[in-house]
Amino acid sequence: MKFKRSSGILLHPTSLPGKFGVGDFGPQAFSFIDFLAKSEVGLWEVLPLGPTGYGDSPYQSFSAFAGNPYLISPEQLVQDGLLDKEDISNPPRFPLAKIKFSQVYKFKDQLFLKAFNNFNNRNIDDPLRAEFEVFCESQKKWLENYSLFIAIKNKLNNEAWNFWPDELRFRKPAGLTKFRTENQSLIIFQSFIQFLFFRQWKTLINYAHDHKIKIIGDIPLFVAYDSSDVWSQPKLFDLNETLEPRVVAGVPPDYFSSTGQLWGNPHYLWSNHKQTHYLWWQERFKRSLELFDIFRLDHFRGFGGYWEVKAGEPTAKHGRWVKGPGAHFFRSIEKSLGELPIIAEDLGVITPDIKELSAEFGFPGMRVFQFGFSSNADDPFLPHNFIPNCVAFTGTHDNATARGWYLEASEKEQKYCRLYLNSSRKNIAWDMIRVLWASCANMVLAPMQDLLSLGNEARLNFPGKMGGNWNWRMKPDCLNDSLADKIKALNYLFGRSSKNIHENSIQVSVNYQDR
Image (tube, helix red, strand yellow):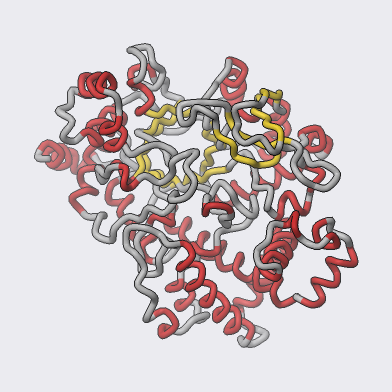
């Protein structure tokens, strides 16, 4: 699928400012959409929205279908009459620039419980009750297993499911029935939280659409081992007789790590998926099409071939490449769902067969500007080598910020970068943004940190680093008319505006030159 010439900002909702310790779907999210509209930016990219597990990473989720409860806005719960104003009037003093996840979980969990109790006390004919029932029925394919899974985890002190008693670990009917009977309220509570999440997200994306803004989502290739997906459908994954992974996912040594990256996710049994015509994936993509306008398919090369590491290996260095499902997979999915609005995350070791796979279906690949200065003028990550059907970034959530990258780059890379950008390095992030916006790439995006010219103190993730990731938050006063005008000027100058702005073109041009 080819996309129109446009621009976007990468900002995960958790990085939004707000009073409750973590960004969420509350007033600040709507204000961010207003900022995008003022800037005439047409795309907002987010990371996976699932409930986070190990290391608070959105790429290690308890479910490929569920939403992260901590993105639920307390203010919206007050508006819906599920909380009183007094319930949220005196929150703890959370840090402004970083997320302390443990504090957030403790505070919001008690709010959710209050909201659930208030919901249960509503009249039987309350419209919200009917809405909840419709949600549960429409999403039961994944919701029932997920709600049961999380209820069991909570009851067993959040232990991973492979440590549960055998009757629950192996999903023995008698054991599951007994748990459901004794813990019905806990299970319904989890379904209720998911109802709140998707209700608020739908309101937010409708608001974005009203402002001519499309949402780019993110689908990780792999799911976490400790997830409702693996627990409820183990035959879809490469597990041994005790339901533990035989092999796990990762990538060989690369730009980020000399020993590779050992992600630890279980691999799929693609032969079993094929027998069902990839039904689980059909459901996953179908759900994503309901939630996003476009989605980035993370680790796209894994569909052509993936790195397999024997379970128990300390690093990803010793593994092997295994052939993936390839074109047959995408043909089957598109036969069912039609053409897919996919961005192929094709970074890393990309072989000719992977290029052919994305080309066959017209999926645009990614170009990361930071990567362009380590070789020579033929580097595919330099804008003069772009093709229109690509999506270009100054950097992604896994990279240093543009300013941080420059400060830590080699002297050779710094010199090449300055020459390429005709830059004095004073505004290196914005010099990169300007050249990217001027390129032929149909879609260009920059992380919010680069538009704010922040250094690596604002980096979101460092692959291979344990702890300290995913916790950056934007300060409350960062979004202003001056920054919006600056972005708007670039969108006009390089034909990326989400609106027809010919009427004020002269004013926009002058404003940019004045800066």
